[in-house]
Image 1 (tube, one colour):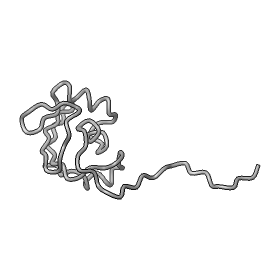
Image 2 (spheres, rainbow, N blue to C red; image 1 turned 30 degrees about the horizontal axis):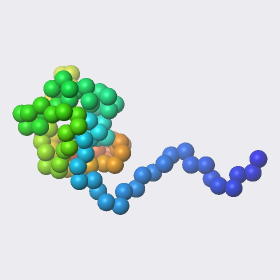
Image 3 (cartoon, one colour; image 1 turned 90 degrees about the vertical axis):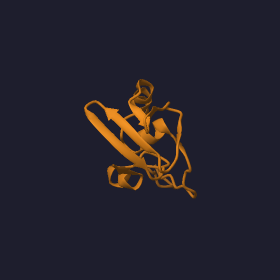
Length: 101
């Protein structure tokens, strides 16, 4: 069997313009705070994710500069949103998208 085009196993997504906002559940999943988007949604629904002192819904649009208080089991995180990835990023790239306070 002769192939005329190479087979690509992984797709790369390139954005020409950075995202201005992103849903809270997507952001938490994309920057690897939660393993799945469903877990991120459940954490928001339970009140484990706060913007300042206010509980947020999973559909809340986040902006750069927002400070999130996140409780995940015994772990408590306070992060400041810097930017938004288009897709889930690898661990080496995570520091580009939030500051751990």
